[in-house]
Length: 334
Image 1: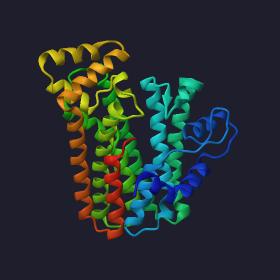
Image 2: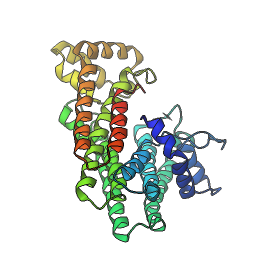
Image 3: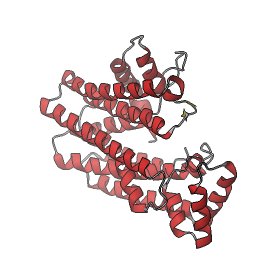
Image 4: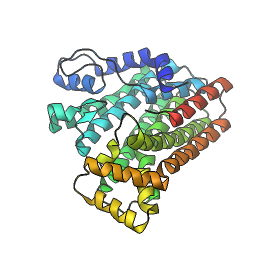
């Protein structure tokens, strides 16, 4: 199973839940949300939305542990809204003018309105969890879900803080990087799998195991993103142009010979990386085996995820689906 296949299975129900939560108010605030979610263009013309990977993981987790995935739809929607509110704010902080090939919310409507849109989307995510009551979830389950989502949001903020604090530093270690992505990326994968399991079973051991599976899967996913951000066909080394301290770059700086390292540090010390520097950086990283190293580390985290999956008390067919998903995420080229 790949993300598209998983999303297709749940897509219509997830989108219906999301649209019900976001609503159809004519207020431009909600138009900005619908635009960011990919449902409409700037003028309001309909478009297709995103892949819905994280909410699909939530529903698959619920079903895997023996629960009714329909019950978990509000939680799945909440995860997707949290993910997207964080992206709206990230785009402002990174001064990114494009996301998914189209202008970002702030670049169209300005930073103040984009901040407000992200804040409102975060609030809708929390309110979404209260809809679990309508699905028959027990009050204690709802409280646990709210706590888990809020704790995850705090971890996302901590990860973003670290990410921004690394922008002007050239002494970032691999351990620093792994701490940052464990908060910024892996935390939401962990939350997605734990929320689904929480709503599908009372077995704490299973719930925690699914969370660990999600955390390791998120680490593998982000590191593979790092590889694609430099060598992927669709990225054109976009991460290098943004001076992102991704795993291949950190590894390259640490493993480079003194002259090579001085050259890399000089490039990353410039106010802006220009196109002519990209070829040189990629040449150095290729010569040091940075791509292979990062891919190997992603593979290690994928194997850790699969090991957690093997220990989980879930049906074999569910394990097969999750195993296939993990392998696809590691081998994807986009």
